[in-house]
Length: 296
Image 1 (tube, one colour):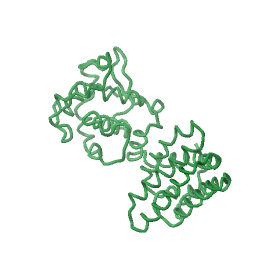
Image 2: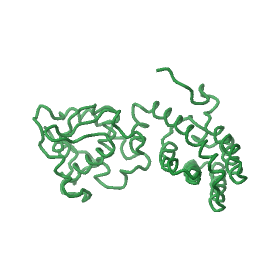
Image 3: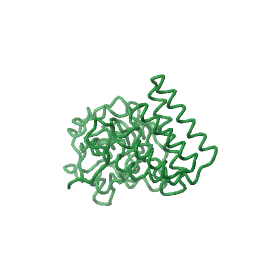
């Protein structure tokens, strides 16, 4: 197998992540399995255009970890995009050669992908890609990888439907758990969004929008809903088009956020829920206004 250098992985052979616990490294032995059962170099070469997208997107749990985080990103995107299909064997030695990274970096990256349900490592079988049914589809990284891959349309639709389920309920519950400091923070976010919209500052608008929705879920008083706040944040970061009223700054979107904040401050759960449903209704130019049952 030929070694193909990748620009993001140069000078990396001696770099260790130092993140694995005792005994973890041996779970991904190098030179495992017969040569005929390994991933051929053509697989890595053909996937090169896809890897060029890595590093452009928002924050996920694998970010900010140097070579380890980059390799998790690249392998994760290749799996989610279908470049490495289900039951595909992954040979750590070949991955290390392809991306010019140390054994420790490869093994730790595979351990992270295994925790996300993307791969499995078993004795006498090696490391293989798992089917979609085994993936943790609520993992922020997988949400992002799906949103910018071939499954982007399905991912956006599913996120929209999930938000339609989560956030109106959270808004109703939050009306009964308001704290003055949080209520003020929500109002501050609406004010920041309005100022950002006037300045044409989409980045500041989106950050304030994300904090608004995260705060609202956190004060709903339901720990399971609070656990899902990261999913909503990921959905806001990767929506990428006119799915909900949060996808781009408009006067209507800003008004809905303001009405939600006012309803929460007044303790009016029904009004808060109604305003949230209006906010999550898609834009008029999109045919489907609200999530509806799909034919299977």
